[in-house]
Image (cartoon, rainbow, N blue to C red; front, side, top):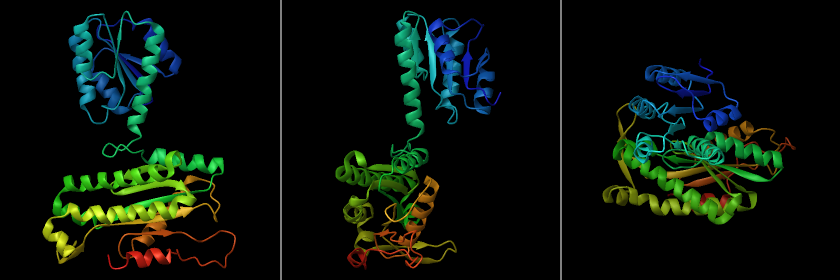
Length: 332
């Protein structure tokens, strides 16, 4: 049962409306019908279904209770749910109030029903691939974007942005303030990348304080420099006046010893396919992670561009940072 792709909850038995049954059949998913709310939850938790259809034309109380249970669980709450109802406006409203993603009235035309149900699945897919806090695409979409550009043979840069001293900020100011900083960084990345690169720019959120943005090679220096500048301008104001003026605060390390914690900075590792040949997204991701780690060893907010190439073994294998960028950020 773990491979169930679609569930139908119909207390008391009976078939769904023809339009809904036809839509489920067109999707090609195996369909299992259950008559118990407990069984519905058990199957959904065992193997999250692609979609759940509820028949509320009979026992509305049982259906809406089961729907609320399904939507109330963090694991099953993301499953798209459609409710089949009669033409009663009150029942229609109750279905949405109970958590339905779409409601089909008896009088709804088959073509309209199919269009609405397809849109429901698209919304569900979109919500699953974005980070809930920043609403930016997640790891799956990042990999797909890199793969797309590799397949199309485009020259591009993959930039891995990560915050320095973020954990210590969280420990001092709370996870709520830390989440606000992450949203600030997301906004900076999105506005700069889209402002400079328009549709050629992509910004994704891996999770936590880790971000990936993908841009044309010609935009790298300008985009990264602006991101660093805007970040360094805004981030001090996320601290108390005392910490901001001092430029640091005292925090405890893992051994419980006090040490000076500088204000947050941002480190960006940059990888391009200008001098390197990549066959899949994992290679790009691995090298971007390496460059990000190298950037984090440098003082202040910086971006570090990988200038190595595959063709010549004589090329230095040490990641190189733009000299003017290093001097511009020293001592921050």
